[in-house]
Amino acid sequence: MYSPRLYLITPAITEAAAFVAPFEAALETGDIACVLLRATEAAVVRRLAPIAQRRDIPCLVGDPSLAADSDCDGVHIDGVGPALEAALAAMKPQRIVGVGGLASRHDAMSAGEADVDYLMFGGPGEAQDFMQIRERIAWWAEIFNPPCVGYARRLDEVTALQRAGADFIALCELVWEDSRGPAAGVGAVQRALGAAREPAA
Image (cartoon, rainbow, N blue to C red; front, side):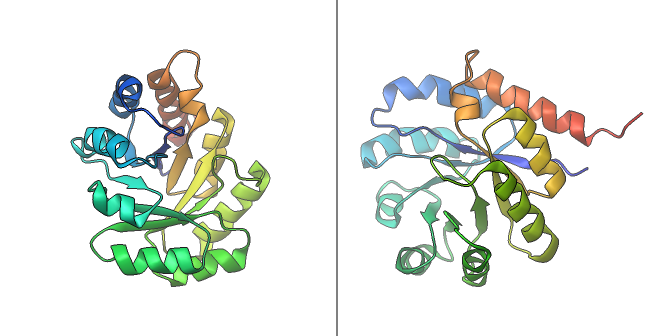
C-alpha cells in the first residue's frame, strides 16, 4: 500500500522563539512534505519558514501578501471564490496554491478545475466529521488527478485515510498536543503508516 507523506499544520503562532525547538523536532522526525504556518505576522513567518525550507520542505501561509513579504513557497486558501482566484493570480505558476474549507463536492470540483496544487479535506476548526473527510478522500482519489490531503485528528484516522487513497495526511493537534512532545507524535504517525503498508503475514 502506498504510504502518504505528511502535511504539518502548526498551531496559531504569535511568537516565534518558543516554537523553534518543537518545530525543529517535528520536522526532523518524519517524512514532512509541506508545512502550513498559521501565523499572520511577517516577523514570525520570516523566523520560522527558513527552518522548514532549509530541509527542502515548502512552507505555506494563509495570505498571498504575507507569502510574498516573507518569501514563503505559497498559500493555503479556505474555500473557492474571490480569495482563491486572487491567490492563483498572484502566486501561480512560481508558487504553490492549495485549498481547503471545501463545503461540498461541487466546491471541490471547482477548486480542482482552477488549477490548484492540492485540495485538503478537513482541517483545524472545521465542522466536518471524520466519516465525511474519509468519504471525500475516497471519492476524490478514485476520480480526479490533483493531489488530495486528508486531515487526521487521531492516530486511527491516519491509517483510514491511507486506505482511502489520501496523497498526504494533514496533522495538527495530533502532533502538537502529544504529551510526549511533537517528535513522538510525528513518529507514531510514521510507524502507523509503515505498519499499514506492510503486507499481512
